[in-house]
Length: 90
Image (cartoon, rainbow, N blue to C red):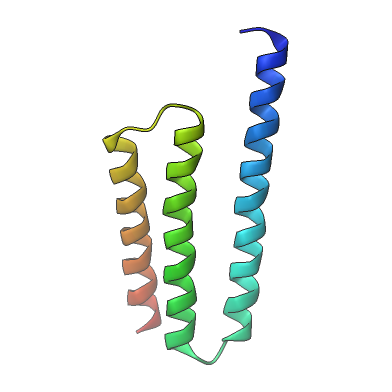
């Protein structure tokens, strides 16, 4: 790889991670807005996990590294986190 390709990839990844960080900040703000409403917090949480799964799939598509193992990994991580949060909110 030459330097131009490396810098181009870093720039593309930077924007992808900034979008993920920005959505995480929005997620935390929404959690604090719905502080006393557990159902709404859970809905916001499920929306964020769904976004994370889609973001991860898109991230690997842009790198041409997407395969079934990666998709399953993102889905399983999302479901495990949802399960843990649900257990903590009950």
